[in-house]
Length: 459
Image (tube, rainbow, N blue to C red):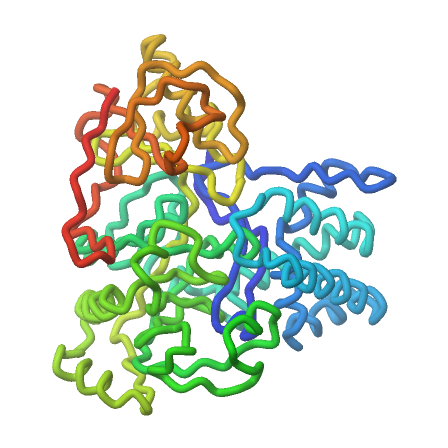
C-alpha cells in the first residue's frame, strides 16, 4: 500500500472563511462510493468522481477561477454548472433548516449522495474528467504553481505509512486529532486539535506554511452557517471581536486553509470547524512562537505581545523558511512501540485488515506471525473503530476511550455502556513492535493548561 496523496476533494475558497475541506485517504484504501442512480453508473465511474460533500461543492463553485476552469477545460455548459450550483445550494439550505451543518453525521453518506448527483448531472465520462480537474486544482491548492510545494519546501508526502519526518515540518494526523511540529527531524511539540465537521472535512495532502498573521480580520462568507453568528456576509469583523472565530492568530497553509486559534478546550479532540485545524488561544500563541523558531524566523515574545495588544492592527510575520504541512489521514499508527487504532472519523474505510497488514509490514512485523489472541484483539479494534461497527464478541482487550483513560471492553463492538463516551482509539501492545514507530507526543499541549495524562497501553 502506498501512503500517498489521494486527491478526492476540493479547495474551499474564501467562502469558507479561509477554511478548506476534503476527504481523501492516507494509510487506507479509498472508500469507494455505493451510490446507485438509475441506471446505475459503473464502478469505475463512481470511483473516479471526487468524494466531496455538497457543501464543499457549493463553496468551490462560488469561486470564479474554478467555474472558469470547468468551462475552459471541461467545456461544461452554463446549464450544467448552474445545475451543480443549484444542487449544492439546495443541500446547504437543507442543512441549515435541519440545523445539521455542525453535526457529526455520516460522512460516507454525504459523499455518496454528492457522487450520485454529480454523475446524474454530468454523465459518467464528464464526471471522470471532473475528478481529474478537481484533483489538479486540489494539488495546486487553487493557486497557479502551488503544486511545487514539495520542491520549494524541501520534501513531499511520504510513500510509507507512519513516516517520521527528517526535516522541519508540521504533521497533522486528522483521526488522532493531533498536530506535531518537527524541527530538523526532531519532534519538538505536539498539540491536541479540533478538526472539520464531516460535512466540512479537513483537506488531506501536502500544504505549506509561510506566514504568521496576528490579529486577523474575518469576512463572513455568504453561507448558511454564518447566519447563526449574528453577522452579515461580506461584513468585516475586526480582530479581537467576539464574533471573529479565527482567534488572535492564524497561519495560512495553502489556498484558504488555516491553522487558527479561538477554540475552547472542549472543542479539541472533536469536530470543531468548517474545514480548519483549530487550537485554543493559548495553543496558537505557543504554536506561532514554536513555528517561528523552527523556521529560523525572528519573532520575540515581546514583539508578539505588542502586536496582540493592538487588536485593531493586523500584522504579518513572514517565515524565513517555508515549512511543509502534512495533512494525514492515518487511523492505524505504530507509535513508540505500540499500535494505535483510531476511529475512522471521515468514514474512509481505512480500518481494514489489508491496511493493518501493510502498516505492520512497514515496521517489520508480519501479521501472520501474530498469535491467535493478538489477531482477535486487532480485528476487534479495527471493527470497533470503523465508521460502522458490526456486532462482534469482544476479546479481553483494553480500549482507550479519549486518549486519557483505560476501560475494559467486554461487549459487542457495536454497543457501549450507558453514559460511556464513544471511543476514539484503541492502544494495543505487541512485543514485536517494541522500540519502533512514530514518536509519542512531546510536550503534549492538550489545551487545558495542564500536562497530558500518561496513557498506559495494554494487550
